[in-house]
Structures are given as structure tokens and as C-alpha cells.
Image (cartoon, rainbow, N blue to C red):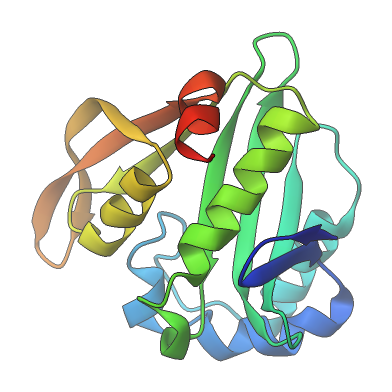
Length: 178
């Protein structure tokens, strides 16, 4: 388990399926995520959960929970590249009651400490839709900087939006995390 100030990060377990199903088809939550275009059945989510629980050297999928052990969402490092020492970050706070209270920021900083300290990565990157202002603000608080944009890449609600590419480097994060 990885411990932050507000949250703990732990491996995903089968028992998390019930909590995941509470937000998985909530468009207010999932419109920030690129792979949730259609409603998801419990059977599909069970299959996804099984894949996430299998140990993979290139992926670390974790549950975000409060110190009181309440499920909040998930966070992951994907495409972990040991040669180039980088990985892609993904996060979702599925329970809206916990939005804008610092839980996502603490989860990201906790995972970055692990990524840079334990995994010895030199860079973590992510993609965020330009309409996800809450996410962009959070990522900047964690040291991420905009590196590039994919223009008009994401179609949502009748309009095309840019996808912003952001990254944080180990040295920059360690300076700001003191």
C-alpha cells in the first residue's frame, strides 16, 4: 500500500467491482475519460477488472481510498517503459462527493513519489481534454506542464476539442514536492 496525506493507494481487488459500477456509467464522471463512449455492463467491467488485477510489468493499476478505507476511484501508470524510464498516468475520482477536495492531487503526488522513487522513472506523462479544467488545474499543482496539443482530437457533445499532452520530470517534481 502507498500512503499519502489524504489517501491510500492499494492494488485493485474483486470487491471493488461494486464501487466501480456506481460511477462507470455516470456521464458526468466518464466524459473526462477517453474510453467510455457507451454504457458498460457489469460483465464487461468484471472482465476489465480481471485484466487489471493480473500482474503486468508495464502497468500498475491501483484503487484510491480514504484513510478510513472508503473507495474513491482508481489511478494507474500505464505503458511503463523501463528503457526510456517513463509511463503514462491515468486517474478517475468516481465519487463526485470527493471532487475538489484535494484527494486527486494527493493520489497523484503519492503515485509520482512511487514512480520516481521506487520505479526510478524519469518522466510521467498524460493526456487531458481541454474541457477538463479541474483536471488541468490538479495536474499543474502536481508539477505537470503542457508539452503539446493534438488539435481538435476529441469529439464531445457536438464539438471537437484539443487533447493536451502534459508531463512532469523527476527533478522538477522532487523540487516542488519538498
